[in-house]
Amino acid sequence: MNWISQTHPQQIPMQSWCPEIEETALKQIRNLAMHPVVRHHVAVMPDCHAGLGMPIGGVIAVEGAVIPSAVGVDIGCGMVAVETDVPAERFAEMPLRRAFLEALKARIPVGEGVSHGDEQDWDGFAHYLDTHGDTQWVSKLDRKNLGTLGGGNHFVELQKSDDGFIWVMIHSGSRNLGNRIERFYHGKAQMCNRLFHVPLPDEQLAFLPVEMPDGAHYLRDMFFAMRYAKENRTRMMAQAKAVVAQFAPEVNFLQEINIHHNYAAQETHFGHDYWIHRKGATSAKEGELGIIPGSMGTASYIVRGRGNPSSFMSCSHGAGRCMSRTKACQELTPEVCDAALEGVVYDRWKSSKPFGKRTSKTRGALDLSEAPQAYKPIDDVIAAELDLVEPLTRLMPLAVLKG
View 1 (spheres, rainbow, N blue to C red):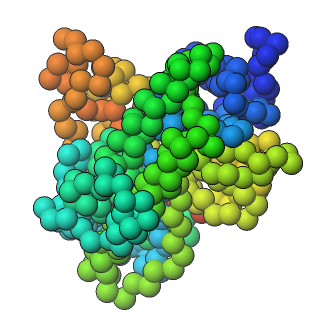
View 2: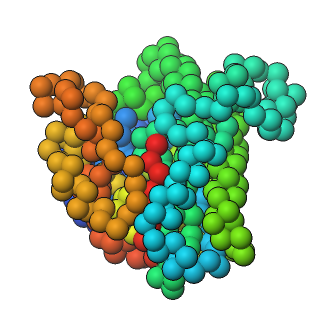
């Protein structure tokens, strides 16, 4: 852990577990340290990279307020992993792994804008409507999206542990529901701060006092999106378990871990109650189990939290990007990316979306934004946070289904 030097006397301290911080992310960290409702210090995880307003891999303590952009648009995004007693040798053959992926795709809708054809039943919808009577966050699309993967860096992986057994891991969140909630309340926060002439280091970091109706409503709807996100992962894992059982009928499913990495929670740290915002960071209380995934071609880890107070009892949520999506599509080649995925079954690269400004280099290019080279080395990330977590199980990918 290192201290980031202060450039202004009003900045609160900044502690970093990230050996190298890109300039854009560093500016965002300094903005957080100057924020009127951020307290004590800013904690920077080793997977840190630039986000919108607040960097991914950041943890802050906020007094009496919530900052929607410090939670992010994919509210409740997180991981679920399940351990099995199936020997990894059962999936040694590449054609069998390919068949596994195809069976997954038949059960789990994958990709941006892809959903179930029918609305899904969940008592969480009825509970929210009965309790709050607010229908704007419960649309037909949200009902159809429940149990779907989404796109971008969301994934389902078939993995093998170092002790030779099969695991399944899924990364997904609240889909379009969380996105709509964040954008709605971020706009409310900006209007509120302008109305009261609140000086902000960055307008993207607009906040809502929790005692005001809009602040309380954001928390209510954020918690709803978190429940939705967890249910989304749970349903997909149920489908993945069914596929594992299809290929290995004798399977027993052992421990299952389901965690968030984009959320705010009221916690006590350093003798004070704060709203701890974790954006691309996970809780790592003492003894708490967590998941830190790598890239689609590298290891992931099951970890146990050490409860380090300096990080607000948090750790990284993954490897973290070292290349933007646009840069990866412009500079990487399919040949280099394929070489990094030797031995892993995955769908080949699709046509690139215009993540940034479309140029002659990106026009017609392949989408290499999720290639292993676009991410930091996961073992370096884990090594940088050994005072935050204890690695328990290393998992290597056998087959990857990407959003």
